[in-house]
Length: 299
Image 1 (cartoon, rainbow, N blue to C red):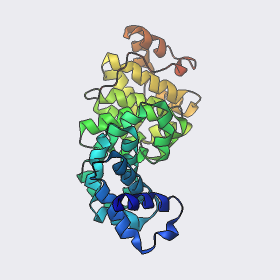
Image 2: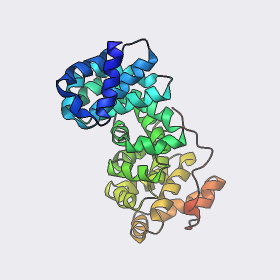
Image 3: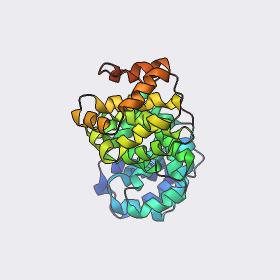
Image 4: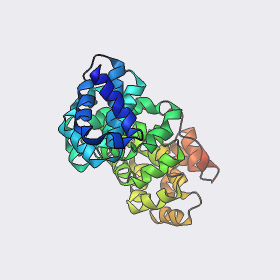
């Protein structure tokens, strides 16, 4: 009963009554950490919520939570079948990652990749996507794009694709530096990852800031090369991205001409799929077409 009372007190205090926390901060953080191992789902969820709120704004709380050993205890909750538990654990870890000294323990505990899995599950529900982006989930997802783990990259790409159906999340992804690693993945052309990166780039290309970001990251030559020598099945994804980038952007259009994009477009219009042929016969109207429905996300 005492443990439950303390956990409830945490939620109450950080909800706007911090002045009543006083000298009890260590003991209440300890109560939350202890409750993470409770058998009661309700108590465990309250403890996770308490840690999430404590870690949101205060550096000293984030340090206390790390010292208490709660990071490894939060990671298994990312696999919870209860969406509310998943979301609280994920947000708690994101908040804790704001503290530089917490980043290594979070990575060591495998939280980033597990968080990507949890985010992927939550992002399947359209109503969650704005909230997930607003809580700071996109920068950690972008960091996974340069991970050594193929699973981490694929989960991150799939989740970013879902989240970027929301305009504000497109802007957040660009601000978080998503474009250079996406361009890099296109250049790798391996295991279907390049196609996923192309689809995310195509989504981001609707944002004016992305056009310059792709050019600055050396993306135009990479995309043209992928259109020239990449597999035929993936070339229509490249064409979609190029059309999005070139739409209403004379600067990018001149860049494409300079990179020799016209010959491969002409070739694709002759030998590609019927959809690719239509897209290769460029017009501004074509640039608004959706991603091919036959594209299947594999994760």
